[in-house]
Length: 95
View 1 (cartoon, rainbow, N blue to C red):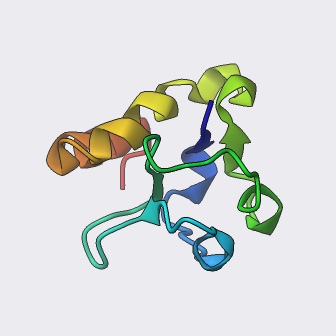
View 2 (cartoon, rainbow, N blue to C red):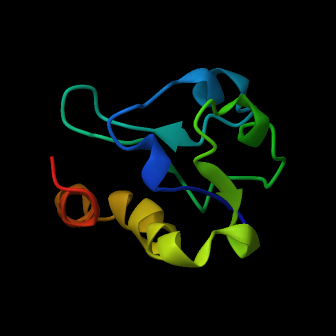
């Protein structure tokens, strides 16, 4: 099970989690994305990112609050279809 970045990160995008990730699996495109994304294929489930998030947006995959379970799919989707993931973010929390 990997970690997931959920709704509280949208429009905050504090990058403290990026700097502590030992495998560099947290990504975003500057100027295009409203949130950060964790690559489920690269995440080693170490948990280093979770305590660094100032808005408590990072969860272990099996601990994602029910209202944000869709973010598990959105995080994975970004790595195959960035536009679809961005549309899902915009639907989850309109700008």
